[in-house]
Image (cartoon, rainbow, N blue to C red; front, side, top):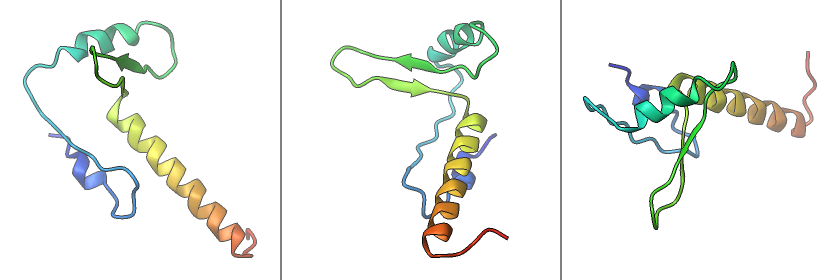
Length: 85
């Protein structure tokens, strides 16, 4: 089983909740989103009186989080007066 909590870093501004169930209705809708071209699929779901949720592939999500973290570290490094070597 993919354990997304192992991917969580202590300084991340995002807190993860991981669930593993035999069936989620959202997978059929996500599968449909994958047929809309070669881009990374994003599914937005909404229920009445609830906020919309965005659903993306977990590996792609962690890639985005890791990339954002690396960019922020690089920015802080530059702000402190360090130069790229």
